[in-house]
Each structure stands twice: as C-alpha cells, then as structure tokens.
Image (cartoon, rainbow, N blue to C red; front, side, top):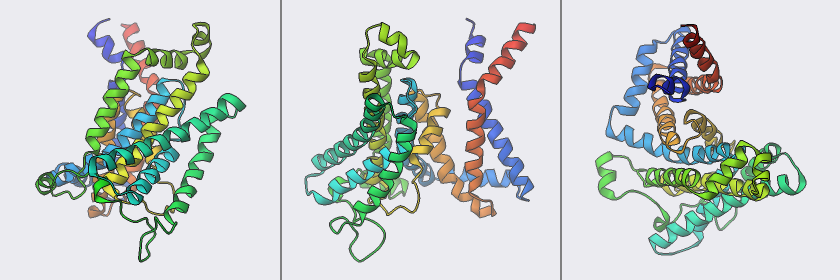
Length: 353
C-alpha cells in the first residue's frame, strides 16, 4: 500500500477534515449572530496561546478529559460502549475526596491512597454493570445510564455528611488535605502563574502509554481485542469472553475513576454538590472519537478539547456565546462518525482514474 493510500484509508485525515468543517460551521453561526468570526476565533486562540498561563490552564483542563477519553477508548477497542464514564468519574472524585479529607498521612502515601481509592471505586462501578450484563443479561447501556444518576446522587449525599461537608456552609465538601494534592512545585506555579498547575497531565500521559502497551503488547490485550472483534470467534478460540468483558469494564471504570481523582486532587481540591452532571465522562466520548479510540490519539484529542473548553471562555469578550464551542465539537463528532463517507468518496475518485 502506497503512502497516499495509507493516508486516505487512515483516520487522521478525516478527523482533520471534520475539525475544519466544525470551525467553518461555527464561523457561519457566529456571522449569522452578527459577530465577526475572525475576531471571535482570534480571542479563542489568544485565550489558549496568548500567555503561558493560558496554555497551562488548557493543559490542566485537558488532563481529566484525556483519562475519561482513555476510559471510553479502551472500552471501544474491546467491544464495549462505556456510556458510564460519567458515573465512574464521579465516584472516583468522591472516593479521592473522602480519603483526602478523613485521613492524615504523609504526602506520597496520602496521594497514592486517594488515587487507589478512586481507581478502585471506578473499577467497582464498572464491574457491577458488567456483572448485571453477564449474569442477568441486562443491557449495559441502560445500566450505565442508571448508574450515572446513582453516582450523581450518591456524591451529593456524601458531600452533605457532617464529616465531609464544608464548615460554615457552602454547597461543597471540605478541602482535601494539602498532603493529598498533586499540585506542581511552587516554582512551576510562579513560572506559569497558574495556581492549579498540577501533575495530572503526567499521570494522564503515563496512563495512555500503559493502556497502549496493554492493548498492543500483552496477551490480555490480544484477548480483549479478540472479544471486541468477534465474541463468537473468541469463544471458539478458547477465550473466556465473560471474564474479558468484566475485565474491560473494570479497567475502563478504573481509568475514569482516575480522571476523577486527578480533577479533585489537582484543580478542584474539593467536590461540589452537583446541580447537574459534570459532563467529564460524556466529554470523554468526544475525546475518544476524535482520537480514533487510540491511546496516543486521546492525548492530543484531550489537549484539543481542553484548549477549546478554556479558550472558549474568552468568547464572551466579543459577546459570543460560549455554547459555540459545544456546537463546534458536536459538528466535529458528527463528521467523524460519518468519516467512512469521506473514504468512499476518495476511493471512488481513485477508482475512476
């Protein structure tokens, strides 16, 4: 296969086309609203790259998105549609927060315990849904939706417990102990002028590399991918498909739970009482699709989405609605979802020559 054929049959080209179409559609909407698209996009770009502080904030926003994107991508690669990353993210957040408040330990141990609690909570949340599917035949998508809401209300309940709730009022938990925070050293904070600069991006990239290694280089990864390609063929090959299904659910949930820990121990420092879903899990679906469900792709997709989320806040300077960013992302996903249409067009053109 020639280099040109590889490009045309790959996903990167069509993702790039989808992103361009998304921005063009956003420009049209801005123009219709009477807002100069060039000026609006200029503010968006300046809000991301204008200062080191803005770049750092974009990276901070990206870290949990990369992890929820990895969660969804891992499940996609193993034949499972994890629409429950939102709930897994939430239980990971509240688990990390609870351990960060109730325990008084030295920094490295405290951080590891908080992260372990979040990973375990996310994994258990995924396994429960997997068990219902394997043992009772309950559709996992419906279970995931239900467990997203259970996590939502469970988090609000725990936040309002006297041992966890913020002293002096406020709809939030107490701050986690400083020994549980994953904030960057003071010199990085001063250099970037970003008070929330943290090690979340390092954790996210390390997780992406680990997921890539597991999927691509291990027997477990081969078995998980085999089940994802064809459950029947995997069974004929002697693979325990139910076991692999539960394993995929657990790992996917653990990654989303880790995302919750990074958000709580890094940027937030506490968990607020939710008025609505946080959306990190659902946005992880977007990240996974933009990243073509590849672990490395999720890193770049998460950085892109994080930059859009943070930079999108600057659109208010030209009186443009921040929802424009959401519209752009939806359009991008729409065209990625129908990327095969682009492939058919290019292949027909090639065949007609």
